[in-house]
Image 1 (tube, helix red, strand yellow):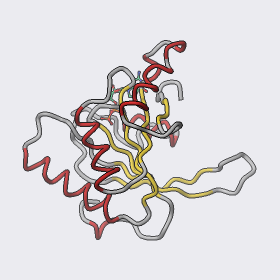
Image 2: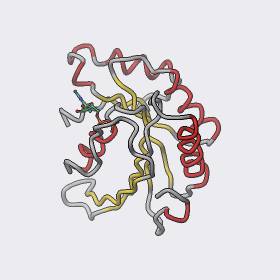
Image 3: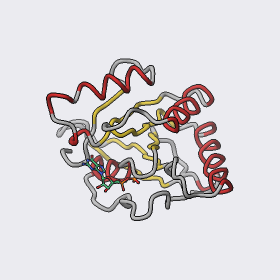
Image 4: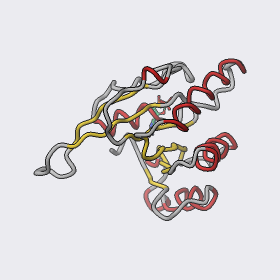
Length: 177
Ligand code: GDP
């Protein structure tokens, strides 16, 4: 979808995913849905320029009835080589969606386990949480790159630096599933 008229209709709980270009968002969506190639793993960072919606059917347990959730893949940010005009288009497309979308329950902000949150991550968090009043869950991805005994470290850093409630910084690895 590039315009609000294109947003899917019919209520179901929705989760949006956002992060710096190349952080591992496509890999996360593919891992969560167990569909390689559902979201494209980027060749050129910063290429996705529309909101991509995915309707997902899942079972909370093996015997439970199937439920539905919708994922919204938001274009990545922080890619240096895009023009200001392009950045403005990104901002307004995301702003309309995050501010207006009634179905949206929470935004998953993805950061890299190997680095402290970057200025653009803080900007995104402030925008989503303070400006738009959304619940933000921070997924700390590529955790497989950190040895198992040291994984609590980056989670604690993210939790503290981004002033998150306990449990709102979640380790993730597309490789380890
Ligand atoms: P996107 O631009 O945010 O959609 O990022 P991609 O999903 O295309 O991933 C960017 C790069 O990081 C690719 O080379 C991926 O293989 C790699 N990557 C993504 N997730 C993980 C992960 O959990 N662990 C590791 N080790 N690499 C990852």
